Length: 356
Ligand code: GDP
Image 1 (cartoon, rainbow, N blue to C red):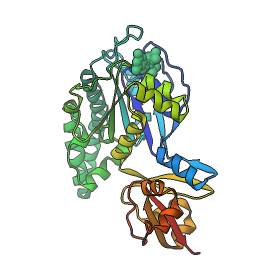
Image 2 (cartoon, rainbow, N blue to C red):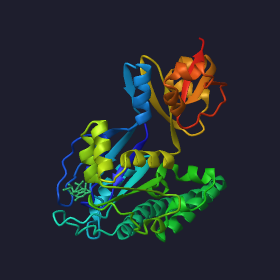
Image 3 (cartoon, helix red, strand yellow):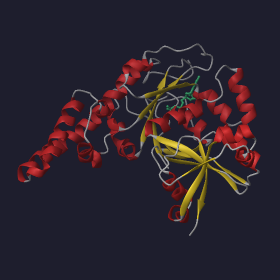
Image 4 (cartoon, helix red, strand yellow):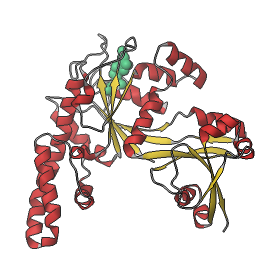
């Protein structure tokens, strides 16, 4: 399961967002540093098509794809340097970062640490993350240079680490530069924060439904993704059943799925896709890397299926739903046969034929 770390300045709505995503009820409070221990939870990825197909197939069980989230304690702002360092170790373990920026204005929720300008917050956090990596890379660069004098085979690695250290020292993020695979290998055990895929969430006021032009896209590295939402509304909506949730969000002009959008953005950043297996026993969404073949996908379901893979019957889940179920789609010729090397596409439903 992919793991995601949620971070941001104090009182921007991190824990609120975490609660909305996981349906957990971690305490939130209108003062900085209300979070002192990381909350860890599993977000069930909202998936209307999966719910629909489970109904059509009469599945006993529906298994949604999941994402593991850590809600990290408040990121240090200026004057609170110690706190960030204390939790950076946690951040290094996650696959992707979700950075929450506050744009809501609420006199009841102090904004002394963050302000309500997303761009300013993004700049502060970009710098903190770069400096945290710069520290680690500067130390490693020294060591790597010594090792390379003793062993010329280590020269390329040492040069890459030195180049990275230089970039970081300028406040640059490693994901903005080009690296060869062997250079990335040289960084791997340092787990640089600035190399992690990053999703920026702008947390907007609940009355604030006008399109936002915060200039945030220009302020952060190319390729990073953005989502706008109101964490408070999403949290409220998360407690409702799906129909009431849709009604509430649509009624307020928030569309159907800021959370679904956020998860989608995180998946895109991590190069993950979801495929489905369907049946009377269960309808199951499964997360795999983009580029996964049908045989590898079969292995995600059961190792016997990978070993004894013969063929996969494949159709887009949306088509299965439109046709009124798998058998109906198949009867109409809408299901195709694919071999072991077929590259699974986002949203594919697969029936694996195998023999062991
Ligand atoms: P964290 O310190 O970033 O984890 O922030 P919390 O999630 O604990 O939120 C701090 C306070 O801001 C809580 O009282 C929340 O209810 C409030 N809050 C969070 N999101 C919103 C929002 O979208 N609108 C408003 N008005 N308040 C919010």
